[in-house]
Structure formats: C-alpha cells, structure tokens
Image (cartoon, rainbow, N blue to C red; front, side):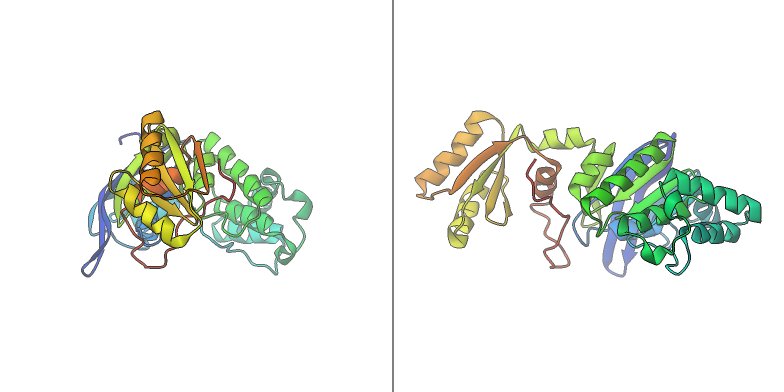
Length: 324
C-alpha cells in the first residue's frame, strides 16, 4: 500500500462489546475511485468516521495523504474534502456567496475567494445560476454546489458519503460525471453508496463489508465473475410456495430472495438443469424463469445472503428496478 493516498490496515473500532469495524484493510490510489458497499449496520459510517477523525480507532492503522488519523488528525483534515448525504450550504445565500464565504473562512483573500468561486462555478456548470439563492436550486444543483464547497481549497482526497441520495436520474448522472472528472484530475476518491448501479458506474475497485469485516474486494468485473457464469431468476408469485422452493434449493445452492423472485448463480447448463429438475421433482411451478449475466446487485445479494442486517430493518442497498 506504499503508493496509496488512503491506506487502511487491520483497522478496528469497538463500542463496548460490539466490534463495529473488525480488521479492515484496503487502499485508495490517486486518480481512482473505490466504492465501499455493505448492508445497513455493516460498519461503513463508523469506518468513514475513523478516516475523517471523528472517531479514534482502537486498533490497526489508517493514513490519509501520509498523515496518520490518530497521530496527525489536523494533517488528515487538511488533506480531506468530505461531502455527506445532505448538502451543507446556506439556502439564503447565492451559490457564489456560499463559495466565497467558505473560501474566506479557509484563508483565501477577498480577490482569491472571488476568483476561486468563479472557477468552481464554471467547472460544475453553475455559472448561469451563480447569483440565485440556493433555495431556488434543484437537488442536483445543490449537490454539485456542496461538492464545489468541499473543493474550495484543492485537496488530494475526496470522501463521498452517499452523494446522490434523493436525486433524480438526470441529476445523478450529472454528479457522476463530476466525480469522474475529479478522479481523472488525480484525486483519490472513496465512495459509499446505497446504489449498486452507482458503484458499478464509478468505482475502479469495490470493497464489500458486513458485520464490520471485509467479505470481498476487487474490480466490479472480478466480483461479478465470483458470482458465477450466469444468474438464474425464478419467479414464484405464491409466498408459501416460494419459501418452500428457497428452502429446497438452499440445501445445495446459493439462493437470494428478492420480492417474488429466487436468484440462483449458475455455472452452465448443468447447474441450470439442477434448478429446473429440483423444482419439477418437488412439484413446484415457476411463473417465469430467466437467465442473465451477473450484475453487481447479484454480487451483493450472493455475498450477504448469510449475513442478515444486524439492525433488523431489512433495508439495504437500493436496487434499480430495471434488470441489467
């Protein structure tokens, strides 16, 4: 990890008897995007709070731009730009005024702040709306302004914590393009997201954590290949019949249940035949059967099939309605 801008090695964080982050290791290099995925309660927020010095780790090491999160928290904060789930800008001020305000707080001169604000407004396509109150901005415009605020002083590292929550598809795509440009400029970017298609679109590498531990990491392509050659989706509308089918297939295969659908990774026609034959022998009628290449959704559900949400909420990453 010597060339990493973010380096995490065997990091641990405990809250009493609960280990929220357990022996986690990964790195983020300059010019790359690493996606951090996991179900609710997996430890993502705790890990981010350790990296941003809001929490102190109990074990292991983490460095940001060469600064240790425990030994040099001020150096870490100076190297970091952080954008959270909700835009942290003043809605009564204009976009330009917000940027100038934060630039002045960070030590830029009056002329330097005005120049930097104009540069960022142009970069994020906000020049035409620069002198409108932020309260009149769309959700996507606010998120772009929030990202611009984080970059008022150039920094080598950007942490994006669910940056497109609540945005419409067009606004998400606009923000994605901004993130791609920042990575192309050499920033090291750590992205947490509940949207699996977002991780697939942006991340060079993905780290999946559950119950505080890394359960898989690699490129999106590598993770998809781990799931199997293809994915078989078996639609069974009746709840009781679907539960019986899941129990039957789980005895010899990895099975995920999504709404009215059983999802089974299969490697070739032999595995597919086993699925069909098992259901047929049990007298279970499938309303529909489809086979497709694995998506990141399939990867996530396969990896976390035996790791239920410890919060008990049943919530997890958002799955696009369209099946890839």
